[in-house]
Length: 352
Image (cartoon, rainbow, N blue to C red):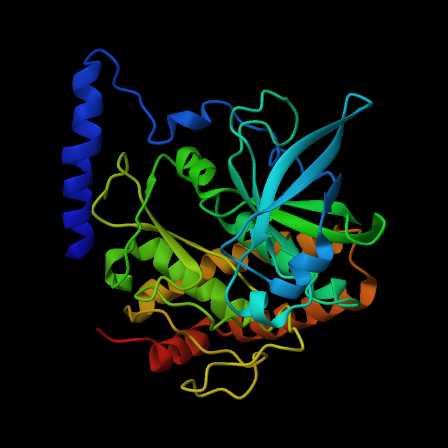
């Protein structure tokens, strides 16, 4: 398989040279530049920051190729610390559609300032798409937390309260929620892996239990906006110390087109046999029924934890919490008859 070839080449050109430089040291990481944890994703506490930049120019151009100068301020031990950074728009659909596209924050790695953003290079920040739609952002944040409740091989997220200071309009301030996503380099180090930056791989190149877990999770939340061959809204990681380094770990992201978030701009891809993102469809590869039953049992065991994650999120209003819980209820009602749900999955799964 193509993935196995990638792993072999990686071992030849990266791991073996690293070992030859220090034969007595058998513990090493791919991302040694991230030798210290920033601490940004070690807590769920709401973090308040201030971002000052030309917000008018940013929203007008939505440029993902040109960085703007910006100043980011945080409070460290009762002192406000401001550092100069750069930022640009990012994303595919949301960059074009949203009034406020998601942001890529670019830090100076030589900046010795300690604090939450210490030792971080580039950081993805998800923003409120348009005024009045902060509910969607908070529901997507919680969806990341739901997947993290299922597995540690997932992106960590941190909720922010952002004071946007528009340098183009006499420093006018707009305050909104946002959240940042764990950088790929930090995730790779945490799960002892290296990102596989290639396309045209298939679900057969992924560890079966991880592939099934992610596919069932996406079925549970009503998310059909992903593809392994297109590397769309999933990342693959080679876990070089695992029992099966020839198969990848998989991590999903971007859940704004899922039924559980239910944004007003989401719609299923036209080739799918569903008419709404609230409808579920299984897009994972086929296994035998017993394998699916075993995979589904993990979700039964995590049900109470999923509901607790939603109920304990104080920032989200009760109406939105109830909507998310209601949507999960419809999945767990199916799961009351696991044999029937397994048969549904077997009808819809992808055969290779």
